Length: 158
Image (cartoon, rainbow, N blue to C red; front, side, top):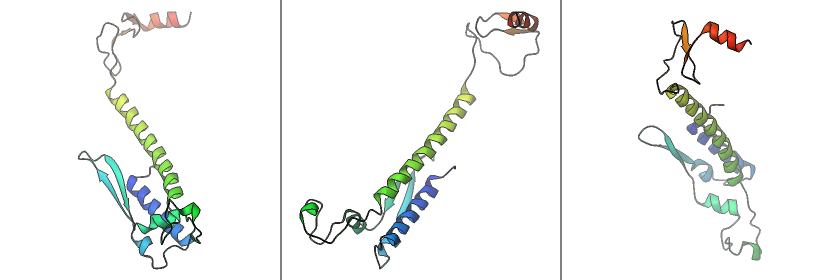
């Protein structure tokens, strides 16, 4: 998928806006237009976090509170207010998607780092140079001793 953090944030906001329409929240459009995101990057360019912002009353709609109905008395007060879960379920599903993307990306980065930086050494500590050797003898990675192709075939195909 190779989803960037910025693309992920834009899609998340789009899904929130669709949810607002589905629940018929905010006839004025003020809440839907208030969405903002910012991807904060460290000095080296790594992403450190995503900041989302929107009108605070959107949370009240999510929780089904406001105008005399608080979270504390929500279950004990007669009200026609309903919870309208436009935010949380979308956010946590989207969070799972970006988590999986980041795992893939970091796994690729780690593998590339290991492949690039891994050096092979013989038992005696001498470095095995990469590439093909032009000598008729090779060095065993397990014993550090030299052996010929003929020796290898003789041992291998006994």
